[in-house]
Length: 447
Image 1: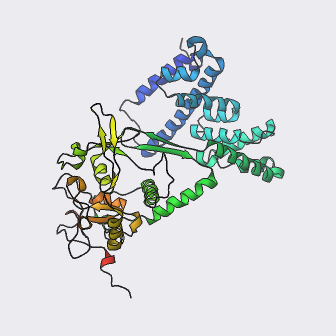
Image 2: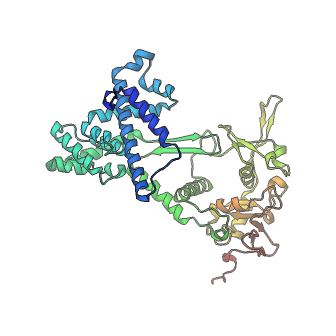
Image 3: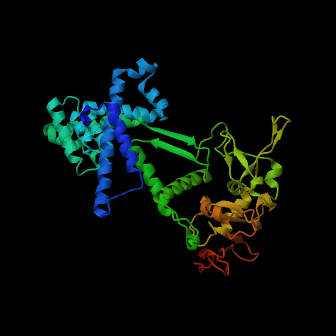
């Protein structure tokens, strides 16, 4: 007797689906027509959505029945995270998605049929959860039907913006008052949920995540946008190896420009008895050693212990405070001397008068936004004197900072005895390596 799918239990049906997927992954696509293959992809997305809805409903049912507690003495989320190596966050989200679908049967039915994708279902249930609590059952069912209908033409992002429209359709007489009340609720929630977190990934980056109320975030967004618009790449735009920056990368650069400007003008309050500073610890002998191997020059950030790259350290050493510390045999700090500024205030003033800003041709960064760069690096024996220093913005500082490879094809800076700074392009930009100077030094003086 041949069994139908309806006669198989759930475990057997999952085994059938698993076997079918194994067959699909066999390298045997039999649809030759392009349109058929496109339709196959659409069908696969819908099938995945149906399986996702079933899985979420199962997770909610397991949570509701308490079977994980009965069998293993732990919650569904904890058990699931351990059983399939999910994060607790992902396991919790799966249970919550199933519980939301349980509360909204029309959405659940559409998701089970593959008519609503998982991200659409999540958006719809979030909107429905935010409807006024005094709506009756009929109004909620009508809202469900409307939202499921909109899923045919709206993606998840657009569906989340339909809450006001729903209230306007379901209760037009009170829509303005309800919308005002909703906005106030959202504001209170946004203020309560505001946060800013920093997390080291231990691979050279810090992940920054945060949330702000809309009105508070808008000035920050505008400020970043202004620095983003101001950013320029000047002469180095001719460099074929110059990266093509994404908008997200430009915003990250704008944030660092804002921070550099803040630090340059000493706008931050003192913290722990001192102005905010990045502290790097390393051996003095290593710091001043002329290292041909970049691996010999390294340091660690105080507080986190995170290592920093040799190239970053070389750039920091151009314009830093040096604070000598005497260590005992077990690395205890025995004595800490006064910090010594590599570039003194008089030298800095002279630099700003002479260079008038970043010396890289085409860059318009003002002196206050520039670093004092040692042409012959301080770590390589270069002295801190006016004839060995030029002003460069943070971006161009990274371009002209010498590496440990003397044959590297890099941008360079030279300072003639009787003229302004010369920027020497790499051979890939100019095979002749013709020196370039900033146009502020070539424009005729205005009287």
